[in-house]
Length: 125
Image (tube, rainbow, N blue to C red; front, side, top):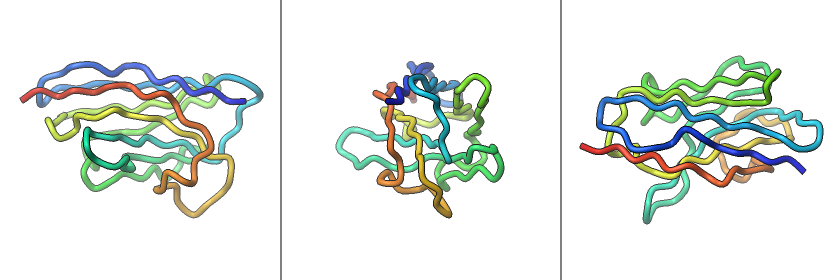
């Protein structure tokens, strides 16, 4: 079994930055891709960003493009989400996820096999 643990969430003022980490552990871990999703109160979980095993061609939701950067360090089994210019509407629980299978994209939650427990990000105005 694979475990994913997020960290780095917290409270920040609008315009500030946070860096989320997602550490993978368990049996030999190899994922086709990893991604970040978020869920605000009363809303559905939404896609934020994805990155393949090679790290090439990351993809972002329009709402975070130009402000967030996804990256991964396969040697450390860790994925990151650098979040800059944060806005109050970025407030949500952020989840990392890992997918075993290969797809053309990874923008739907159903494509992922493993999920972390989530980390709260709160952006004050």
